Amino acid sequence: MKRSVIAALVGTALIVPVVRADVKTREKTMFAFEGVMGGLVRTFGGKAANEGVTSAVAVKGNRKSSLGDSSGQIIDLSEQKVYTLDVKKKEYKVQTFAEIRAAFEKAKADAEKNAAKMKETDKEQADQAAKQLEFDVVVKETGQKKSLAGYDTHEVILTMTGHEKGKTVETSGGFVMTSDMWLGPKIAALDELAAFQLKYIKAVYGEAFTADMQQMASMMAMYPSFKTMATQMETEGRKLQGTPLSTIVTFETVKSAAEMKDTESQQQSSGGGGISGMIGKKLMGKPTPPQQRSKLMTTTHDMLSVDTTVSDADVAIPVGYKEKN
Image (tube, rainbow, N blue to C red; front, side):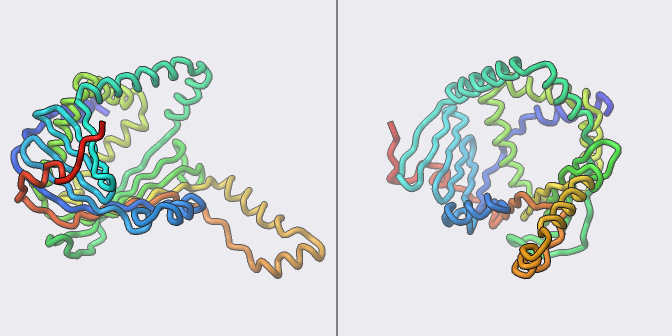
């Protein structure tokens, strides 16, 4: 990737937009895990795990509120404070930006100490593994259309595949992340949510945020695979014109050809021989062929409504809440 492209990526992230307008949304988010983990989450996770979480998000001036079924948060850029809400207990606690920054700096220092303790051989192996990765990014229009939250939308699917360099994902194994998006027209009001969040990050983390973005640019320059991915994202991203009003992200792991062969061999030999093997086959029936792809997790995010009329009450601590000492 040319240095100008890297500079543009960093520069874009460092731009702090001015919060110009008010906006209020209702959103629904759901996480679904597969396998044993998914079963445990569905069994013990309660309503949120099975039906998702609906939240109300509002920005008015220098204040933002996010309120869900069980928790919430209010950020005040003028006060430089964050209020964390416990909906069930009707309590809230307050942290200053300075306190949040101090906790971040401590965590970062601890992480750097742990990284310094890593053996040189481990660092080299991790470095080589990163250099051997390769990513493919493809964006496709399906031609499907539907109405969501009062807007006309069209379906666009972004697929990112990670695999060993010079091999297909079916040969080397790896992962596939698919984002199924329904894009509506450009909704300027929703840009205020991203603008506010960026102002908050800059206010809390300051120079540390700038340094991390520069470090990310340096990493991209070191590893060709990340440079290629960024270039593909830039090219394919031009097709994602509009505002996503519904997004389903699916993450799948992919077994390599060698792993598939081993799995098939194990399945063929698992039935055993003799009478016991015959009885086992009778009871279990015909085994299910091994699948090369395994779905790990699915996340769903839906924008239910967008409004530009926001009152002071929408971004205030709800009535009846008490500060937790």
